[in-house]
Length: 358
Image (cartoon, rainbow, N blue to C red; front, side):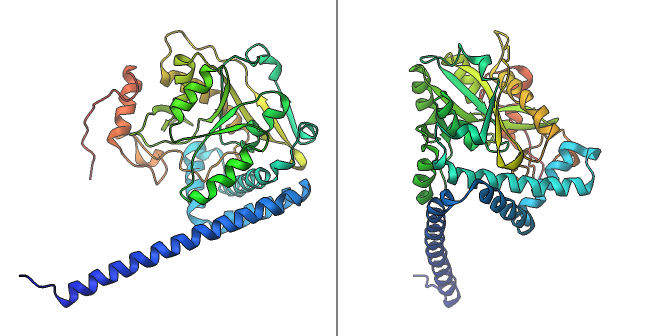
């Protein structure tokens, strides 16, 4: 029988100890995160709107300084998206402002239980809703396509107060203790949260009942999942086509909506004009048309977008690496999404095999 050497035993013991310590620290960290956010649900609703705004500005400015990894991503994103259009000074200003807008969004989400049908108009202007009077009548399925711009959390939340009740598709947190907190906040106005787990079936059932659903459409999704490739600031990225699928398969009307900041901590919710999709438009073409309606707003005022997020996780093999952010990688799955786009194939149908450079 081969014995275990002392060095091997020591290595195994060290690994077991390290694993146990990491697991214990993870449990502690998750509990501390829960405690901090649970406390925030009690404290932040007590603050005035001005105090929320000032607190978010402070937290955002600090985060932009200490989060070096996120700041590097944001600066790289801005460089490839705008090229020489922005000076180094302006890029740094946008990064700081982007963190501040994100902080405002989170703090305002925690303040949202203070929103009511009677007071929401003090804090939110709504424009162009009159364009959709017929489509937003009860019993008609609608999917609101939104993006991570300014206070996106308040779009669905406040919509219930101006007569556009809807469900919201959201991501679950790795720390499961946080999910009930955020679900409670997002449902504070009466809307319903649909988890990404099993979202397709719930989405279809909700729309078939003639109800409305809001979904964020500008996240980069792993290319091995149901996605399509679109152009975003002239670069290729991988996004959901759930809104396009809902339009084609469930007969839902797509309405683009975004939120933009106003002075003194107020917001404007903007309902976009109708997009006329050709009868033979592919899922990819529908998703592209929806983003194309958002991009001019982001270009005109970039700071409210989430620039610290990795919007371009993939780059085409044929692309110059300098044209993409430093974190972008080559992926066989992404090449398949690009082939589906080029040849107008059904999503996830490509079996293209490519050799990934070492």
